[in-house]
Length: 252
Image (cartoon, rainbow, N blue to C red):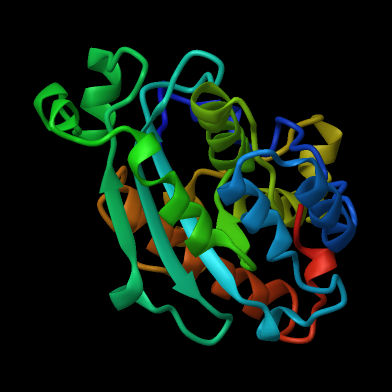
């Protein structure tokens, strides 16, 4: 997960996080299958989406994380992808995938400091063109699990637009949005109400995990962050939802 600045993406409870307003994903995927021109993208959409009333315990999930050259999908690009297949009960780390990519954007020094991926490493790495078909095959039929959908969904959409002239969208569960939902609805103390103060709560991945007593992992490795996101979702469901919660209550 790529973060810049002291308060990355303003992910605190003082900043409103947009509520998910998901489409009916099976219908949307069928529509997009008819519109897609690239065979790999068409096959991805044809794999469809699970029924919205499917219990989260029965949902096929895939945790995904990107490292990027910056925070603007319009001008930045992906430098690393981490994938970890999972269910609510198990995380299949041995089947995880991790790729370094050569971006079509300048790898700025400040981003190297954040994620540690150097110019020499990306120079030897493939372009996303070389593996996006494999990526789509692994994503097909899954509900993606991400921490801040504004990164993974927007960056992959923009990256494919640049490479094949078509973007992408997909159902995902955003653990940052789920965490924001909990803190938005949490009662505020009388003193805080009297003085118009709300406690400042970070929604970043490490701080969100700490609230569930999950272990700290080294940040800014796409595979490790995908694993961290997978564990966070399991904890969130255990504390705030149930195994029977339908995916439509969670996905975006």
